[in-house]
Length: 253
Image (cartoon, rainbow, N blue to C red; front, side):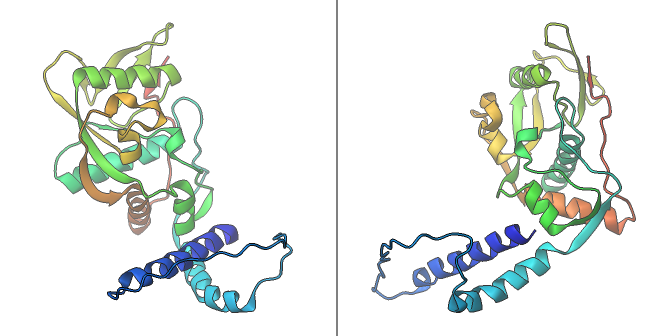
């Protein structure tokens, strides 16, 4: 946590410094000038007292915020090949939050292992735990996908036996999806309807090789995925519930 807090502190300081001139209305435009030096900078380099005096208040504030305990996990929530407890956890809460944000049911929730950068440890979960899990400013969005695109999604999932929120399916010996059920309905790619998909804007834009989503226009929720995770953990804690997730047999093979 110390290194994360330090990086956030420094980022905040640099952002504040960079934005300060931009807030001015005058015509003066400062020009950054960097001088070169032959001095090698290493971890052993002593801290500059003047810089430390400026950074310390920011660091303390970030450490306090990142250290806030928001929930408890009895067991680690891990990501693993195939159906992943952590991906199940994220995809489920994203589908639930998107439904609340847009005021309508959402058919599917998608989260890949690659979209999650850390696991949730056993024991106290902090704001910093969520930042490590989702360090990016990814927004929760909703796609409306026709049957053929959803079919491509399940073909992608079947190759790696990845689970989705709101669906179950089986994988054939050839690695093809079969017996796809969205909710309780047997999926028919030729049926003329649009399926709603809760997903991050990164994945909606083709991240993790989900290129078939690129032509679809995302509907914004105005909610960061990180905020949705944070809020979900807080809600579980308020209800007296632990933070848990498991493999549920969403993918059969």
